[in-house]
Length: 61
Image (tube, rainbow, N blue to C red; front, side, top):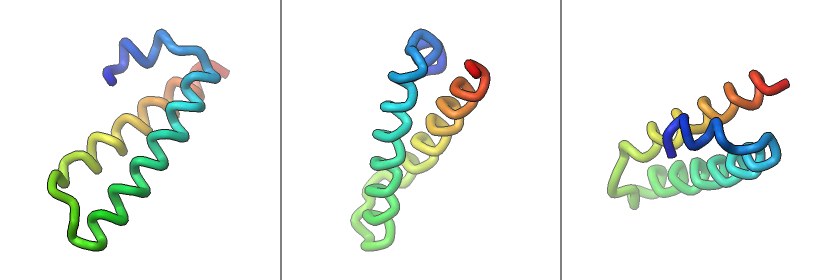
């Protein structure tokens, strides 16, 4: 999801999306630890999106 789409969401929607992203990040970390991760670039993409959501939540306060 790009930043324009994230800016259109409300604070509650961003918090829910952040929770989903953290669950996905955990799942990817476990896949990496067990050697099952086929696309390692997805970890970076999820981390970047988490940072974007956190920035938007901080700016909306």
